[in-house]
Image (cartoon, rainbow, N blue to C red):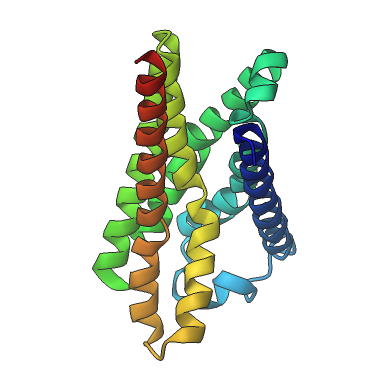
Length: 217
């Protein structure tokens, strides 16, 4: 199989996973549109529902997170970047503003009140802080015309964006494959939801650098 065919298959596979994950996330989000306090994740947060700041942060985070996931359909497509630069910039602008000014503040509030005691709270606060920093750094680098650094930081940022999907995936796996208590599962899930994503992002970035160096050589 030719390298071009392999790249096409990889791209198709990535978009298939992204499509599936985004569809499932959309189904989950639609369940919260009724603003019912006894739906989905809210069943586990009954102790915090009286806190207006937490409840507002939850709905802001849930309803705005879909925009960040959808950004992946355009931000990492070389075809769109080459032929539709304006679309790339417009979606990137929405992605950045959504994270820096909407999702990050809401996620910090949710991290402070996370289940799973201190280990979970630390995990989510680290996740949110890195998410903010990588996204901000991507903006700084593109303004400096450092396109490759911009791409690398956007890769890290989007890897953390995908934690919205991997968190739920790991929770399902741990719940069905272990007999661990819910609190323990939540603490493990808080770290598994983003650390493997970040390691994969770093591997992809290192691989791209190796390809560039070999091409120059």
